[in-house]
Length: 292
Image: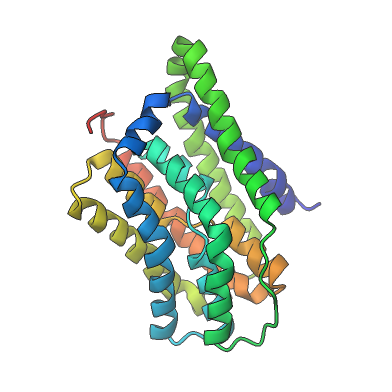
């Protein structure tokens, strides 16, 4: 196993699980019951992730006249909403973590059904020569969601409930650790895509940047249009604009067996971390607020 594989397959999942544990220590049951009681934010976020994101991706692939392989690669990315990384970014940006986690969990589960449908259409529409039956490893995907998100957060919440003072003391150190891990992940992404970085940015750099900015913009505008508060707006913005690049790369390289389709995903990862870094830098300065 190479150093890059070790980072992506061992260190990254473990690091994200630790971050989820830290997030869980900031949450209590009422955070989630409040989200369920006021479902507007959830409906807005899921509509952006599961409907508008693939439509924007398809429109951009057509507008930029991408070749079939690049177009399908972009659609793979657009069909993979959210992921643990968005929860990490939301925590540092001081958004509504419970909302972010809820959106990630629900969208990840629903996408098991939507991804095959979207990509089957994309393969047919863009005329790719890839002959593949798209079938997600459902059990593996569910185990990944449970192992990286649900279980660590649940453990963190148990710690918060039974060791409240300890959990509160750890809030700031965990946020600092999240930022450090984010930087390490960014470096790992650069290393993993170093050989394809230049060509990838030439072929898909501009369209993936537009995808990132437009989906974040969509999240912000829809949240403000429906008069969501700042913490919910931050969460919707991030969840709408940060995609599950890890799952997308697995689909491109392991399920469709096409490494070239991973080029837009690698290019997007660069923009995603850069724009998210700016958000973390700016929004991280905002004083904590519990306002609804």
